[in-house]
Image (cartoon, rainbow, N blue to C red):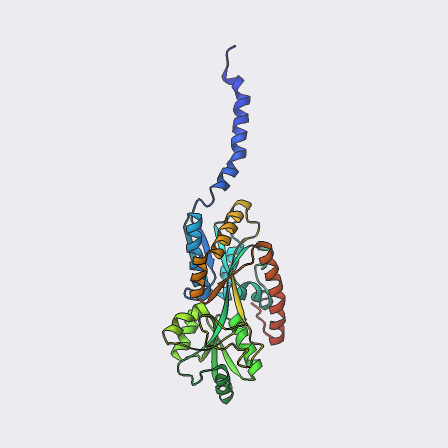
Length: 329
């Protein structure tokens, strides 16, 4: 029997349909097929940027694809965070989030264009970082207690910097002011590096900063570290007391950093990213890199990270209400 083109049409249609059905699977299996953008919602040089670049390098090695860090600073991290929230959920745009922006800001800003839980897919907490209290070399104080005395003797004349109104660093200064019964003037900057630079210059006298951001300046002798704000001393500064040891038990402030994707992130990119991030945080070589920055690897992944975020949002909401801090825009 002679086979005609028309007799082959049903089979061709079936083959075409099968090919179409297999196409999304093939495309997903190719992830990542192009460079990934990791949005850092702060200026270059700060802790989020430093850790973001470490993460980008590790992901590039593990995924075999370029990971480009894109700094989108402004509005205390809200601008870059909003961009990530609105990105396509295809795994090619990720956010280097931190506790300051993603769990503090929702209680500060009344008109955020993004929701910290509904608009993101939690992937992995990659690092936890304690803060360090640094002062300008011109400040005649070598301890937190001594600095409190200087501040009491000069009410309102001591300036402290942060990366923005309502940031964890701002709140740290407020908590210390209340605990030590001192008056200090808050000065907001667009990023940690400009604030640290002004502290070095003496334009502001003190800053509650993350260890990764302040470490190079401390090691170079351009800033003076007087305390850390973790539950225990930092391995990088074993001789430096905690704020608790100095008599300020309320001044316990750390920060975490996590990689988030937009809400509804596709399963294939989500699984590959979580696998890469999990392997990264458990890698001794990466842990050593974090240690050099005064950071420890994070442990929370996926749903556990989301639960951590929900709990932290509730905690900071209470702190912000007590300090009576709010931002309308």
